[in-house]
Amino acid sequence: MDSAKNKHKPAFTNLNKIYRNPLFILTLITVGITSYILYVQMKIGVPYWDVFNYLNNALYFAGIGKGSALYLPPVVPLLTSLFFKTGYVSINAIFILDSILLVIGVIGLYLLLNMRFNEIQSFTGSIIFISFPVVLSWVAAGGIDIPGVSFSIWAIYLTVLGVKKDSKFLYFVIPIIMLAFLTRYTAGLIVLPIVLYSIINIRKIQKIKKVILGISLELAVLVVAFIFYLMHLGAIKTFYNLLMNITTSSTTGVGDVAYNPSVWYYLQNIPNYISVGPIQGTYQQILNPSMGVPSILSYITILIASIGIILYMRSILSSKLNLNKLKISRNNLIKIIVLIVLVIGFAAAFNNVSYVINEIILFGICCILYMLLGNQKTKNLDMDLMFFSWFGAYLIFQSILGMKVDRYFITMAPALVYFIILGLSEFINKINPRIKNKNLKSWGIYSIIALIFLSSAAVTYIGHTPKKTFTVDIGDASNWIKEHDPDYKNKIIYSDYPPAVSWYLKKQVNGAYTRLYSNSEEFSKRLQKKDAYYYIDSLSEPKPDLDGYHIVKTFGTVAVYEKY
Image 1 (cartoon, one colour):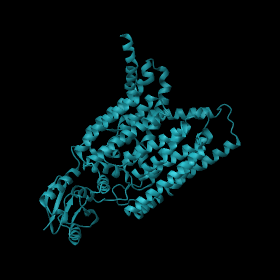
Image 2 (cartoon, rainbow, N blue to C red):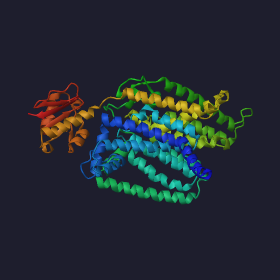
Image 3 (cartoon, rainbow, N blue to C red):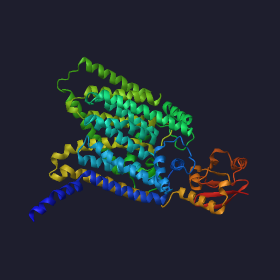
Image 4 (cartoon, rainbow, N blue to C red):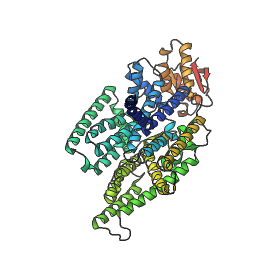
């Protein structure tokens, strides 16, 4: 009898270990939060324009419709089309996809942080990432920002794993980078921290020649396949123009609602991206945290993390230099001079030249810093600089471009989390000797921090969530047209939100925008010239009087105009 009991003990012991595993707990929490947000998103509808472009492109990939803008990144539409092919043709498909990719990304972030920090610190960092309002509100929104950063996280993790553990993992890096790039084109910037980390640790990579050859072959095949894909869609010229605009920073966005020339936009809004308050507010304040007000939690986090990072930087300098007998070799003096020149050059070039120059200078600064400060006592400096270059690469790019949207900060969120945890861990280590409770010392403080962030984020999200978005009204208006006019597919239809109407009607709908015309008379002449039978207005307020057209139905803020 006793022997039978003993046989079951290992199984229960293993199960107990799984339940106590921070990654297991993190996965449960992430799935739970994501499921709730997914449920809410399904009720309130699509939050912004581009989601409908991805949905229409998914229809094209599924072979049941026309794409809205096929030059856009294809991965999210392509994966969404798999849902459509099973017969589940619904907006919810893209929400579900985003949710799945968020969970995958959070797991990857935990594993990545765990290469530098302990389990409870990595757990807390992952929870903080989820809790960022700029992340939480976009978890299941149908966009490409969360999927793009999830693939980027895995590309970085596999790089670190390949360098530290087994070089075989490096063969997966290029395909994942390409996946990230094809999910969100600007995700290609993740190459910079990956290259930096690889160069810093070049001597640690096993079978380096074989790895370089394999990666080169992978890259060649993937690039050729992508070019063939663009040629097949007939979008190669459009993509080339888009790439040139991005590379040269020539797209300013003047006149667009998202245009903002301030290069400090993202830096000054970091407190908003960490946590917003008060508890009650508008949906726009969590979709775009810059519209809100930072909470006290945000300022406390920044203060404590900053103190911790200062202490950490001081310890790095102390480990490298003998502060009592400061000796600087000729070689180090040259490095210091080069570093000073690069920093001055970066400050002078920022916002005055192409972001590419600034990225190169940043890369050089990181390399010189490692050569100056890297040693056995600063063994984690390679990861510190990799995350610094990750944050810096995206910050430079997003800050110089004229178009600024808060959700673009999601690309920098994992790097921000890294430095928050770095600062918190250093600060907590400093106060640890004064803490008597053993559990509080080891994992208690971090658990409390994670719980505070999670609770604050959940309460804020619930307090800012509406019952529906206006795109639901566009859907109702489109469905009304279907019932009102069985011949609607043969009618010419215009709208100021064409991707949405195209999705709901499953036909090509043209764009027409009152804001581009000096008066309603000029606009109505445009519609008449194009022989528009219906015009669906969702953005104008008040609704204009259009000659030759009358409003036949309204749904919330959406009005359906019909030709006399």
